[in-house]
Picture 1 (cartoon, helix red, strand yellow):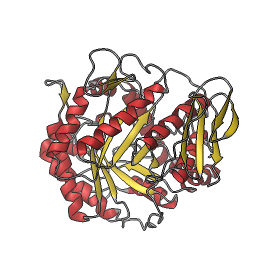
Picture 2 (picture 1 turned 90 degrees about the horizontal axis):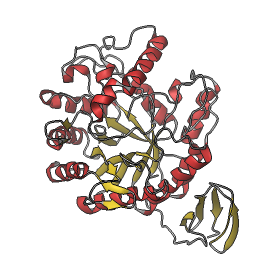
Picture 3 (picture 1 turned 120 degrees about the vertical axis):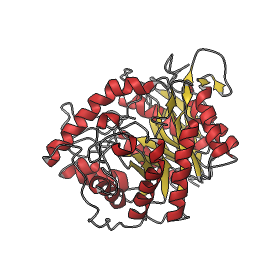
Length: 457
């Protein structure tokens, strides 16, 4: 995903060239200017020597069950806010402990090693400290790579090349950087290796370069386990694309046909990895060629089908969704409709047994002229909670990873229900009011309404 937003813009795997030429370049320039205005120095300046001590971090909260639900911090987050917005944002993040994820470079973090052996952890420290203050179960995504690992200049960062993979000659260097990060933040016990196979596309083969990615993954995996055997490591974090047209593939449904190249990449990684504690992917419910088919709610079935396929192929590894998207750009949904679709996506994740689902928070800068932030967790400038925040908190509280689910059937199948013995959540998937009987009680649901209800157990 681009460092400055989280809106879905998924296309064919050949996205890299168009990405670098277009939207990402614009977004990164905005981010660079914002950083320069904040520091008074140009982005990409030489990093500081590794003289500053690592931050003192509170350990993650002791909770009874892995919360399952969480958020990925992007270019702007609570550490970029000021005044009352800081307290509001941290309250939204921390009132119910959730998984929180941050990339080690990009998406709010500067290059952690601008030159060999010279470190600059200031921005990453701030994000990890934010996660600790807001009671996170912290995760770090080991992406992206400093420029000198991919043919660039030492001491500078060309942000337009953020998504270039490290050269094979520098895989060991990247693994050493991963180990350095793990030692600096000993409270972080979960790491995802790389992001969306960025830079690992073979134009000549018209497929993902799973061999090169897995070589990098294995070096990182071994380096992290050498630091601490208890560290949990996952991959391959490959995007799972679908098409509506064409022939049916190994994994197909009314929501489309999964691109076999994505599945091939996953299977190569499964067969050649040195080890893994979980399997991680990402994707959109929309197809590449026809958008959401046959509709926005049925399209969500893709997530459950892929989850079951992954669990079967890996022999039962926990399944993580590092990113998931339900609204292609340009649809201009109301917040009520957007949140209803997101809620049903979470229901499908829970029903299919996903262990972790991370929401890519499209938070914008407090300096944004419109003040609008569709899908964000809090309102920029003042930190006022937005609907998605309550949704994630509710699911983290009532539907953690190992909760027992209860079968509850509504009288109208246009209403979706997820229940456990003590609580249930209902969603009206239509733009009209619906009377419905659920769990022996009568409800009147407004268009796209999300309703939580005690079950009295």
